[in-house]
Length: 600
Image 1 (spheres, rainbow, N blue to C red):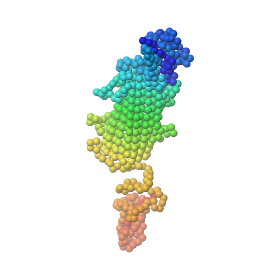
Image 2 (cartoon, rainbow, N blue to C red):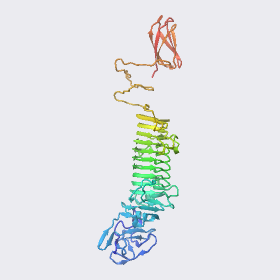
Image 3 (cartoon, one colour):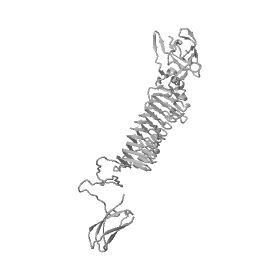
Image 4 (cartoon, rainbow, N blue to C red):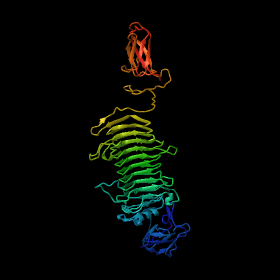
């Protein structure tokens, strides 16, 4: 065997926190042990001059000078008089004549005492590795089941990296043991915690944490409300990639307020949250978050609870089988220059208990939804109904702009339960909603205007169906609804040339209404209470019942077929009842045409 070299390296000391690293005080006396708490002290050391020593003294900068450890020992627990000891590894290992330089920024939790046997409590060992890791370094979890009894805290700019992320637990599906699995006796608010600068004791802002290829399996947790990952306060630029959190009793991911700040500017890629007790993703005032290919399935509340995520985006995310809404966009998104909206693109929902997507947020920035696919939401514990929809905007003051949206109803995969959702898209009490296109098939109605909307615009290319998928009832000829003005440059051409509603022409020119083709004309229907008709005078008078007459109606009279002794024609109005035509000669028996118009 041979002695290995320790010290004189930035990655070698772990006693007192500073900027996410650990250091010792200037001139501190350091002893070395084989155990993090008690154990046996190593006294067979050689100092920098090769002289025997039982302890080492830090230099004036708090650095550990170079020394050699006992024969055959490549790692020890350092004690500088603080509350805890810290792990220190040899910076080079001598084997015979060969010297191997170790990688100081890649720390294996097994080297710190972690076992990963699905039995041993590995909390202290994993936390020791995290504490020892320099900023920019990686704490590595080899394949195994690591049991924990208390939250693990990841320092700033440290990466926790595993080997494999199982997406979900299914009977008969391969489930390799590559995860952190809290014990039934676990005590704490979350399995993994990010601390802000104040709570973590860091000298700089808490930022740049990473979790890669890590799964949290909370299936043995007993206490309620334990989150998978919890972050409170000013915690910036966190990255999660290929992370699975399943069966914790609280939220899968929970970001919260602390000391006037919220976490922000996170990046989440391929994050799966499966069957957790509360929301899957509980995001509160998370500015600049990006979620790509994230999924929330089977959670006890909403899949995605997005409570103000200004300037953020969800791309290709899925919400399925959650007890409440699949995606809930809520909260006060503010009205000032610092506020901002959100983009949902290429997202999908299926079999959520309430709505696929519910928007009830307040504020002025826009929510943009593009290519939303909803399916079988509004399950409502199997009963369907409940007023739920694939897309539901309810009391939203934020402008909601929807590109393509589809809804497809159905029942459970085994054929049981009631066909749902009740509505494909439903809008109630909103300030401004615009839906450009879509195909909406639901049990009761594809499109539902629940009333109370200030502006609800429906584009021309939205198809509707009702009923079951096996026997749908088509309702394709639905109106294009656009409250407000529409401006067209050039010709506006319609196949039938029909409308149902008042037309207003506000052009001030003399020819504001122009029939531009020779032979063109105006046709007005005749009949009961019509604005055009004819009457034959008897003894010089004719009374016409017509409830369309008002006190200001103008009646234009034309003699169509003269009869008897002709006289001058006049009329008198009886508003809401009709009008009387009178000739100045009682012998007038002419047939008289009339046209009724109203002043603008």
